Length: 176
Image (cartoon, rainbow, N blue to C red; front, side):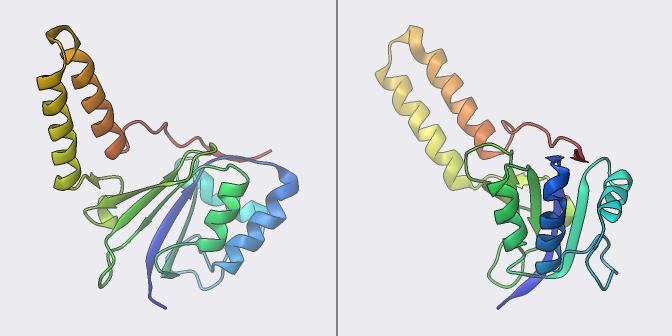
């Protein structure tokens, strides 16, 4: 199993009744509050302290996350519709990635990144952009002039989605 650095920011409201489960998932994935920690957090106060130090988000990390992911924690967050942003470094054949889950019913979205130190700087592959342009050009040739604006709007929406620009900001982390 390949292990490499990963960082996750968790936002949104976690019911107090679920806080022990959240702590268990964090411990199972060996997610730390700080890169130099040797043990995962084991109290709600530690989670809230991390959030207060990191812009209102619960920030967890690991230098040795399995495949650069927090598999159990991410699955738990998704099942409870708690939003997060997870980034991982590039390693061997793995690209640096950013996974964004907005807390809704849809699956998390994965994006390529330049590297983890450029958190949030998403790369849109040239092949993806080429597809959008080809679709727009085909629409432009086929549609009446008065509908070309619709095709352009569609292409712009596709580019925004591919770059993660249509995802709402992460809400602050709270235990309620």
